[in-house]
Image 1 (cartoon, rainbow, N blue to C red):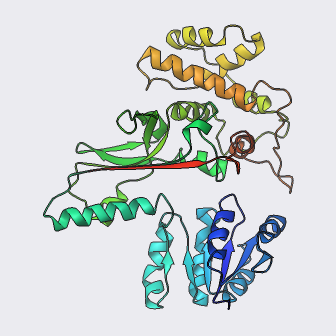
Image 2 (cartoon, rainbow, N blue to C red):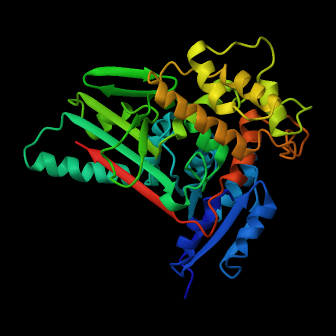
Length: 397
């Protein structure tokens, strides 16, 4: 078949192979994978050497970026969202269309008039969430409006999960995309509207709600996702008393990751050069004044750590003293949360002297604590080719 399209895919991460497979399925598309890790791009080319090529690219090298973009019909950016802007600007200068699955950024909004004037398409938010969820929402909204109804409450929840029988770890989660980016997303400030009140929280995981009404067979929880209110005007739903977009996970996930946030394991702070193991990483985050456990938490932690080696039990107590459990008012639920956190620490290897970590990048620079932990999570919680995943989406009007 004659080649009709030349597509430039920027990025060689965990989500790229599926995208490439979709592009190649058309049978008329050449794909160039450009990455700052050339060997990763070259490995992807092996999927279909006839239709693919690899290129090295540093997106900060604007002349090289523009030259590569100009030799293709379309650009798909699968790199971190904060790097989309120079790519979009280069596409604008070279007159090429661009697609990302990321949220529309202020920079994209700024460029919109010029993009439109040049007859180009910069398509954002075309993944699962955001993407398919928005299309489903607009379909229902338009049907309601055509029927003469007024929508006064809107809740939208979405989650990509392993199928229940393969959610076989304490977090009930497996990574099909960058672990560091996935965990970092749960640190974002969340803004939403609930029963007429605007809610702003810097700890969305502590706002998780158990969703017993979503499934008879799966235990799910939801937590608010980013700034929901920017979508109110875009959707034309300014009259809503409740307006929230949220993420779905299996129950227990939020308590575990929230505690990791509190302890500092997911911080962007550079990891100390002396760190060799995951236990070292945790100890480094507990330096300085040691807070005592509160009486309520102390009894529950003592019960969970009974029988553990003394040094491990002490590490758990010092770590959980840093966690804020004030949002869990029921002692039974708090006990379950603490048990799940300790199970996760055991599973990930915080008590294993052989669980080595890499704190320096190839240039010898210290890596963020989040990335160091993310390496371990990416291996221990990997979605393998033998695993099946599951998408759950629920709109409540």
